Image (cartoon, rainbow, N blue to C red):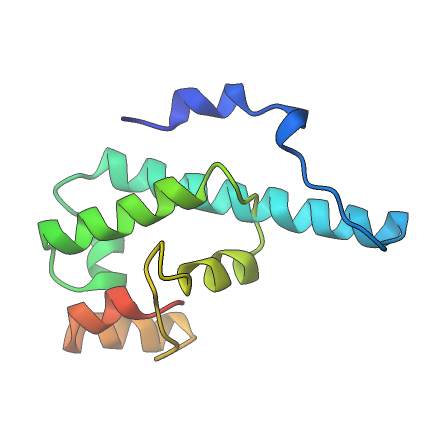
Length: 128
């Protein structure tokens, strides 16, 4: 199932509310959620458009493997409808056991790509 057509189904009813936050704090959180959701959707769209792998997938997850591809796509499909943007939210969400249950092995793109080259299984388990 492709998520791209579902983007238009997002409604304000799914919007978050923030107890004990002032207007500025709520706006910052809403912006972060929006950005995290966009990022999660972008991952899903990229993966769906490249079901046999891509240079970007190889850079971050190592040589293409159907099992790793499915694991990542499934996790981001679960995440995409609920999040909206900031990298931190996506990163933290991948730690959830219901999604990927990731760990922090490396943070920069260079380190993540090195992990992918050396240990693709660990690359999928890396939260970054």
